Length: 364
Ligand code: AFP
Image (cartoon, rainbow, N blue to C red; front, side, top):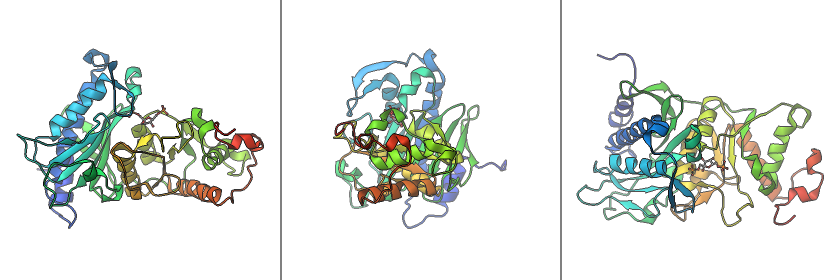
């Protein structure tokens, strides 16, 4: 007997197992159920808050030189434990592990590759703010049977067979795409089921809301400064409408808001740390989020190119990210093109009358 609701298992069986396409092999639904089990376990651990004795620093740094929280390591282990045994994965990569985690004895090796950020926005943990997990699934060529290496994972985001995130907020949600739209499931805690509550999410093409860490403004490139300044100028400026701003310091929370009601999220290229191309990591942050955003009708770019077309060169590569409502992101891309061609119009805002304000701090 059906109760009229669609659980994650039913959705995946209907979508993948009963309608196999040429690109989707069996086992993907089972793998995603294991990912969902990791998410439920993480949700339970986070709900205990400070009572779980897992708050605070782990007194270690990750491959990016960032301080690891105890929960960064705990949630990483939860993903490994739930996903390594099932014979579906060949290997895993995560923000918290420097090297590829190849599946080894006693577990059989499968044909999928999982990249994940187990706890996005972990600076929010100690303030009981929203955090998330992000994941991306690739499929290896069937002739590749040995242990996966870095090269196995260095594939453009357009090749993902599934991507998703969990948001641990007032409710826990899993937002997922297997290439047929973006769908949201809400965790029914007492039963332990993810139930489809947001079918075929669509990002509005237009929006008056943007999200960016304005404390980095002096390091941005001129096209991003131009866009944000025009938003701040509001109805008295050239956009002739007021904009609102948000910043939650968790990409998951920002992308979730954009999927729910539109907007733009930017972590653009800047000159704060010139050796870094951006802040967010391509394989397990930017690529999966771009997949979800595009599947929901939005756009996701570096400023100059589609993120899903970026060819990765390193496991933990960073990339600039500008994503969200189609018309706003297209406008920002146009601003980059005009700037690169030297065609951008002079700004009307008083802030931009001084040439020094156009320049990155290192050049001013
Ligand atoms: P972590 O994954 O290390 O917690 O970083 C989160 C994040 O990469 C991303 O989710 C946010 O957009 C960004 O950091 C926020 O950083 P700042 O507020 O420090 O600019």
